[in-house]
Length: 169
Image 1: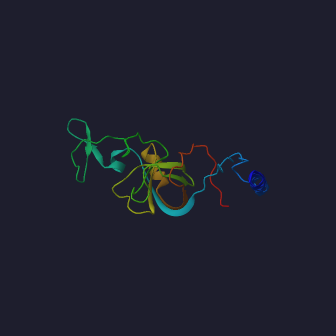
Image 2 (image 1 turned 180 degrees about the vertical axis):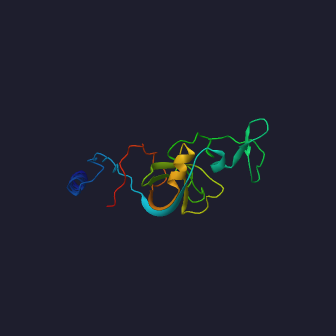
Image 3 (image 1 turned 90 degrees about the horizontal axis):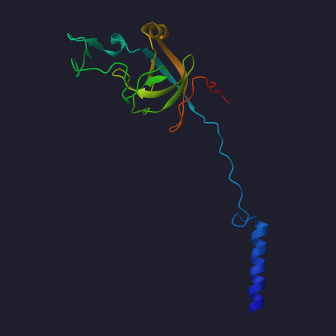
């Protein structure tokens, strides 16, 4: 009986080693592919800046910024602060957050990488995006463009301003 168990154990060991069982020979984990691929979408882009004309605010009698129209008309307005609570900077994008949640990363040709951190009253649907510029002159210069952009999957980190543009493979 003991001889049969020994032969059976040796046969099992031989089968496992010949078959490349990963339990006996653990392979090193490979590094995941570092390239994060996005998908192309055609989006109508507009531009905005922190001025009252772009963001619908004005100064009240005391010199404080307030909403100039809509349901918050006359209520205090935090100028330059996004819906996510951060300060708007170049690379800040406003989108319909039902389609592109806060934190969604885009590459926009001619603008660069941007991250959705804001939403706007006129930004509705998945084919609209508003790009932040620091001055009204720059926002007017951008105007309105229909562009083929790249939207990256959820969880993609914000891209640095000098990151290379994506290529079509």
